[in-house]
Length: 571
Image 1 (cartoon, rainbow, N blue to C red):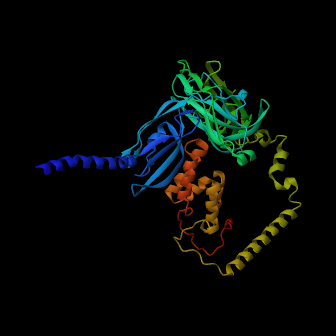
Image 2 (cartoon, rainbow, N blue to C red):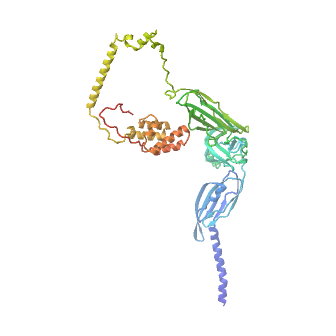
Image 3 (spheres, helix red, strand yellow):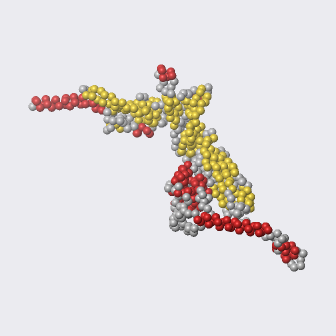
């Protein structure tokens, strides 16, 4: 009995001793996370350290509030209670995206999770040109009170006083708007308050999507300077360079009820003729070129220049518009150029109505209309025009045919060869007849000698008759090169040369492949009717003509033994 009591009293002491031995090991196995500091300013960077023996932590949850960079890892080995303990240390640099109290959630490390942490981020002091700071940011917005769907130019300029080794300039997209970067960065060197700064200018395009207050957060820059000789030698400074721009607030106006449609908010719009002919000919194209310059617009929101409607008086072929985007200071600028080929159908006076474009003036807050005056073309009859009437015959002098009239002698002189003295001098006619006879004999002799020469074997009946140029490898290689790097005019010229014709319509008639005929017809409609995408047409042309044109078969001409009436065309 006493022994049993002693045994029962000894069990609690053994269990307690085992727990005391295992508690340090359990604490050591638990992953631990900590920050190198718990309070920073906006734009600064803090390091998060995680110590664990269960693998690498998952930092995915941190990307909502932080930008991650500079991830590191190291391994530690220690002896504890006669056994070797291995620990891994992971580090990551965190740059907060907003100010305030940010919570770093618990990170999953193997089967365990770290404890959450709190980081206090103070609003960064915005440095300006007067602060004499190492770096500062300047933000320029071309319109503080834009309309919905108006293109607003935003220019961000970063000034820094030392050379940069690396850096990142970020401008976040505001809620309720779209923001895209435009063009390449511009660099310059400027003097600000007597100090020399390097300047990097970056342009953005901001398009509000709804009316109301729009807050554009200031741009942020995080980087490292290259450092100087004394910094490297004495170890002064860590090379970090941060800057934050000021926030901008825009008041976005709604689309006015009386605004013209389609909705086109602009700062200015100007139209002009760069080519305006005053005369034309029937069946021939007269080129009219219109240029539009829009301040505060992009290619995506601008509509095409309208095509004039001339009814049955003329045909109008409009080429695709050419766009050129640029910036005028901080305002986006768009230049559109479009060419119209006008082919009159009848002579006379042809009035070409000038283009008209309704738009909304964002500066004056009212509807405007850009327009050009009408063009009046004096149309003359073209060469070989079908409506050209033949010259009238001279009137017949009936009085000269009356017997006994005074004009009898002149009538006889005009109809009787003897009256003109021809009977007295027949030698010119005889010489001409002899010359023609000699030429006829020479022609017979030439034909007889040509018939005695051995003739090349004529192609068998039913053999396909195709242009000789198209069958050569040089012609196919030239066609492929033209399709890859030349314009559509050169492509049509190469196909005409391979077919031995002058017009692309004749090429289409000679092709046997329906796909090749259709893509050439679509090309004509896209070039002259403005229908279709030229980029996709080039891809279709490469596809259907990858092994050359497929010409239609034609029955060979019967061999009659005579030379052809016209010599074969040489290309």
